[in-house]
Amino acid sequence: MATLGSPLQTFRGLLRELRHASGRPYRDTPAYRHIVATFRAHRVTSEKLCRAQQELLFQAATYLCLLRSVREHAALHREYHGKGERSPEEVAGLVGFRLPQQPGGKG
Image (cartoon, rainbow, N blue to C red; front, side):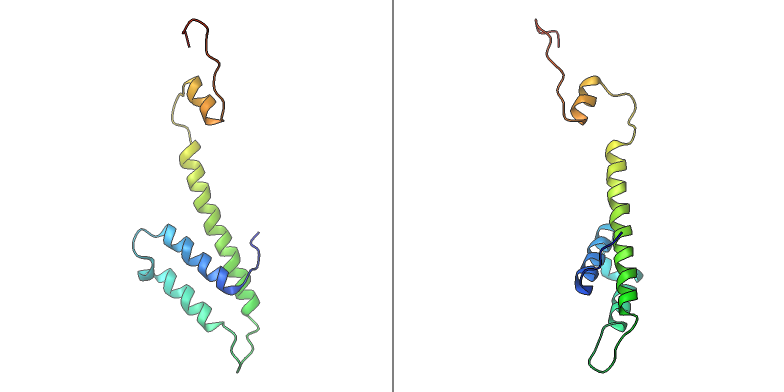
């Protein structure tokens, strides 16, 4: 689960993941505008105490965890998803091994 860090760290993390996920400039997206508006609306000022700040921070941290997990899953899926039949050398290299060499130059 997501850890609750500072609101600024969570905000920056969300923007970083949004930048990774968006193909176009991320500041033009509705998601960016919503995140910025929500964080501004729930900030604590000297005139009011925001009771929903911890709730917002928890939701934002959870959403950040989801975005990171989806991005990392997609990267793992691209790398390890079935690409058809692989040679034994390629499979050994995939897990970090080398096949032994045959004497006489046969392998």
